[in-house]
Image (cartoon, rainbow, N blue to C red; front, side, top):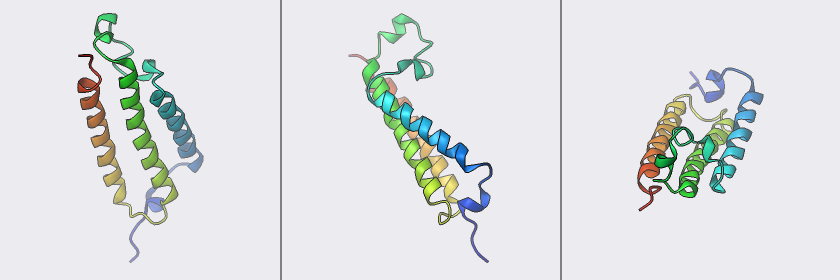
Length: 114
């Protein structure tokens, strides 16, 4: 019996994934340039006093780097959906979770002003 692949378990139109990849790419580039802090949840709603504690450019770059990793994972999943086993979806989910934790840790350590 043939092992199921990502293509076997994926549902929905492919164009939707392409739209998400393009949006994530644009957002990643924008954040890596050090702009777009209003896209960062929590930071955009923080008071001015709390915002002064963070280096906005570093925070944008850390978030952009994390978004870029997620974007690359989506591209890999899309390009190799016919050969990747279905169980690889769990691995990608774990990598995304770890990426989010690392972004939060870096955002609260490296991005704080001294």
